[in-house]
Image (cartoon, rainbow, N blue to C red; front, top):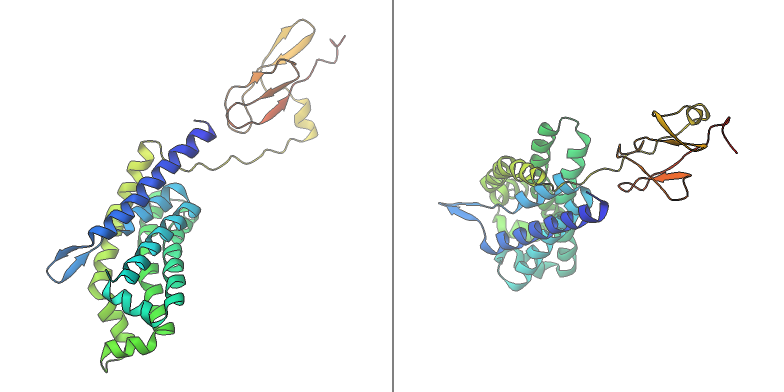
Length: 262
């Protein structure tokens, strides 16, 4: 798959995941008694795993933007009170919180070599970051509002138990169970951010060594070889002096045999 096709496929996947985030936020959580189970973090984590940090952060921004809109419009009563307390700060806080929630899973996934373990660790990081940043922000920037809500209780305990509580545990479990599965499905149908192969440094000694068996045509020795960067078969250009890989655009120069030059 060439770069343009890969870019288009990844943009399609990102659009699908962004639409899922918006849809899941509009639907809201699945209410089971007093517990509300939200699935919104699943597409964020899956996108971060498959598409990398930039796309993960972008999906997180979509998440933060929807939360902000819901808060301003009153769809989220608690969020509306937070925005009324500090409107400009709340916009920045929601967007940064969302971006970090999408960025960290991608960073963790890339840092861990065992990818099965990496997928589960990335899924754990997202709800921890989302809830942790929320609690820290409430304590740092909205302490008077938090103390008003706590009605005399310890503000820190209220933030952890009252605001996060069992909903965080459910959110954590859902992300860990579903996000790696969604990422595996996306990879299995071809959606994956591929890293560019590192450039290979050729020494003077390596330049003088033929890489593959050669075929003689006239007085010029043409070299049949694979691209040293991506391994694809090379095609000789009309000037018969160089080969350009059509997959990664790597350029390899051919040479003439010293004893056969005209």
